[in-house]
Image (tube, rainbow, N blue to C red; front, top):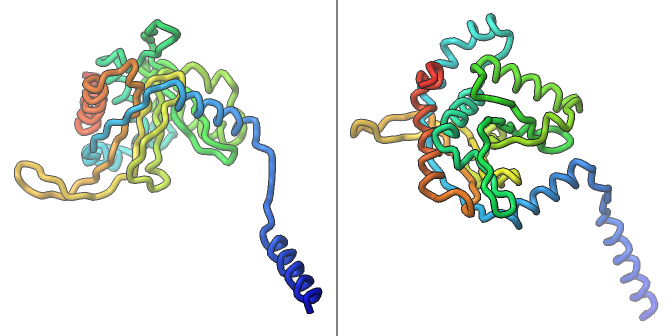
Length: 251
């Protein structure tokens, strides 16, 4: 009886192990590099995040009104990201400390604006760089983003497309994220997180109205960037997005 009981227990243990099958595969080179950079960011920055929310109503109106004409003229779709790239660039010009990094005991301020756009692919998250965004119009930014998405999905991005950015924008909103604290893309000093657009009640002129709102999150390296500068920088982005005519007129 004792032997039968042990045999029964052994059989049950074997069945349990067989039911808990694990699949083990090596990390890809890209995933290893992503992991290394994330750990660097955590260990080498004093990361802090500040938040704000933006009324997307005016940008949506422009997009809906001109998207067909825009596509006919430039052969590329008009999206929201180009507005954020312009808003970030104009705000970086106003707050140069955000467009800086710490290297050893020195602060390096970049006088050019190379903005990384986080793109999700089957192989992982990659961040191609749009160079000299201060010299680019909305249509040129949209074309560059479209080109990078194609190259990313077809494994055609080169190392030169991915290095030496000065700032990064990531958009978790395309997956439905309401709010997050994005991790700094080291050695950069800050990153902007965009989230999903949702109709929410807000108070305007002492009246409750419904507006398409989006939460923005700015993670920044507090060793270099003071809270005041981070808050005002994010507020500047908010003001440009809520008054997009300023972006189009570059004022």
